[in-house]
Length: 245
Image (cartoon, rainbow, N blue to C red; front, side, top):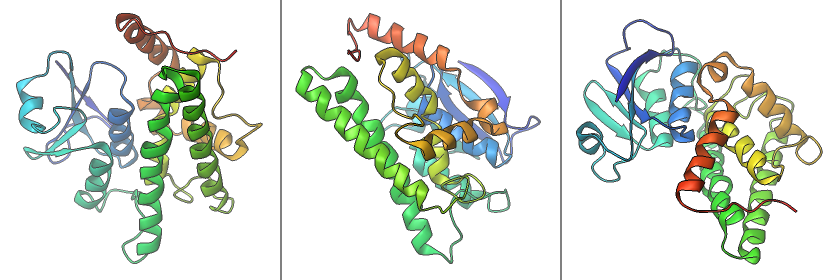
């Protein structure tokens, strides 16, 4: 277990500690992005999930998973829950991830699309790439294409704004931005393009723009490192990923 200061240096804000992973995790990255964008400092504790620590088991006894944000000794679990907690607990840190409280419709829309990233896009990865039959993989790829197409439409509705959150990255940007390295690694391993200018020009441009943010440069893992990690996992599990013919 290793500890490090991140997102701005100095002593952690209000005793913030993030339980992360020794391996690349888009869900841990998601919280790191939010903390970096908000300019908050914290201690990062990397947990080997093959040997879960007493600290993790005490902080998240229900699922024993990361990320867990510990604020003044009290744990907050689940990545999207943590993002909203950061907004609520640190209202003076800018910019906020959610639209203002006096725009409940915009806040509901942001939550909807953030959930869509996990429930439709991320959830399609396993059947699309690891499905046991060609039909299951085809169904997974169709689900992924539909999820990405819907996100392209949501970005089009932003009417020329650079981010889903408008002029600054918000909840949806952080949620989707955290999975860019994994998406690119999946593309490299399978030969199937997901975010490309020919099919999703707005999302492809958004992904480039998001990756140029200072917070993203600091936090997002290198795609090559994610590919190496996934190859190791697949090899240990004796699983062969389906490649596009």
